[in-house]
Structures are given as C-alpha cells and as structure tokens.
Length: 241
Ligand code: NDP
Image (cartoon, rainbow, N blue to C red; front, side, top):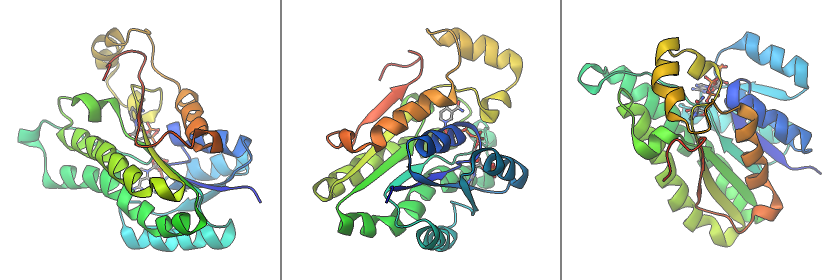
C-alpha cells in the first residue's frame, strides 16, 4: 500500500504544489483547506486528490478530521504542516484578534495536527513531519511580529520534536521559503513587492510553489531518513541564516 500524506492548506498556493508533487510520487494525499470551497473543488476536479475541510487552528476539528482521513485513506505517514495566514500590522496597532489568529493558525496548528498522528507514527516506526515556516521566522519582519513569532516557533517545535522522535523512525524538518508567487504574496501592494521585496532577492525573482514542493518530496522520502531537526532555507539568497 502506498503511504498516506496529509497537506494542510493543500488546495492553494504552495500547499497545492506540495499535494500535487506527493500525489505524482504515488502517495495517497489528503489536502486540507479552511473555507475556500470553490478553490478546493476546482483543485479536486483537476487533480483527483481528496480534499478535506477543517480549521487547523481548532484541536478538536483536527482530531476529528484526521480520524476521517485515516478511515478513508489509511494511517498518516507524512504530515506537511503548511497552512498559514498573515494579519499584518505594526505591533502598536495590532489587535488581539490579529495576534491570536496568526498564532493559532501558524503555530498552534502544528500541535493540533501533529499530536493526533504522532503515536501512530511512533508505533509503526516511521513518519515524516515537514513544517513550512518562513524567511520571516528566521529574520523577523516589520509589521509581522505575530507571523514572525509563529514561524520562529515552528522552527523551535521542529527541533524539539525531531529529538524526541529520532529513535522512532520519524524525521521532523522545517522549510523556510522566501517570497513565493502565491495569493499571499500577490495580495501585497505592487509597489511594495517591486521596491522592497524583489530588489532584496539576489536571484532576482520570486520563488515558485513547485520549488518548495521539490524540497518536501525529498524530505518525505525514505532516503532522507538521516535528515532531522533541520531548517531548509529556500529564498533565492535573500537571507543566509
Ligand atoms: P495561500 O494563502 O496561497 O494558501 C493558504 C492555504 O492554507 C489555503 O489552502 C487555505 O485554505 C489554507 N488555510 C489557511 N488557514 C487555514 C486554517 N485555519 N485551516 C485550514 N487551512 C487553512 O498561502 P501560501 O501558499 O502562500 O503559503 C503556504 C505556507 O507557506 C504558509 O504557511 C505561509 O506562511 C508559508 N510561506 C509563504 C510564503 C510566500 O511567499 N507565499 C513565504 C514564506 C512562507 P482556503 O483555500 O480554504 O483559504
């Protein structure tokens, strides 16, 4: 039987590219999304990949959703924690709602999604957990104290869990994309994108979602078993950690 991969935020942007790449590699893929039914159904029709709707910031929803995935596809072998949002604001103007939404979706979701699948991975002696962090979790970013804190937290989570899980055949790694051509980046004002972002990227362009997906394919593979606790920086040279 082929392995089962769950990709959160797996119907759009980077996550959609990851879902498609793992599907092409022969995994049974569950792509989780939050609320954009039109995008999810277009994705499902175009790819044949199973889609599931739940909110990764809600622990009970994750536990229930993962039971459904297990019943329909099988036990989860590969978990890609990719879902993320931004609610940008300078901290002196940031609302509690903006802070909590980003921490809940981008950081607490790693606990919510990983906790229900971890014991199964441990008992089967295999697992791959890949957390999509961000360049802005590595270097910090003006207007993103919430996002930078959550994404830096993802890296800490990765390092701790990697050590806890190493003897059980489970690897845990983080990928830190730089600016990548998805809706999240397209939502930025064009002049900010050109003047403040593209000029800072030595490679001279945005990343493509497929370039992040290639890294996930590699980290998910059996051959990547000696790589754990690592942070893979994929940012066109913008920030060298
Ligand atoms: P997009 O905004 O293009 O897509 C986000 C995906 O996450 C959608 O499928 C969305 O579902 C899903 N999602 C959002 N919130 C939730 C939730 N609460 N529960 C379940 N699913 C949710 O994002 P990107 O592809 O740009 O980003 C993917 C990841 O990469 C994020 O973690 C982001 O922080 C990170 N990243 C992105 C960079 C970039 O430049 N794009 C740079 C560095 C990191 P729905 O379609 O229903 O809304």
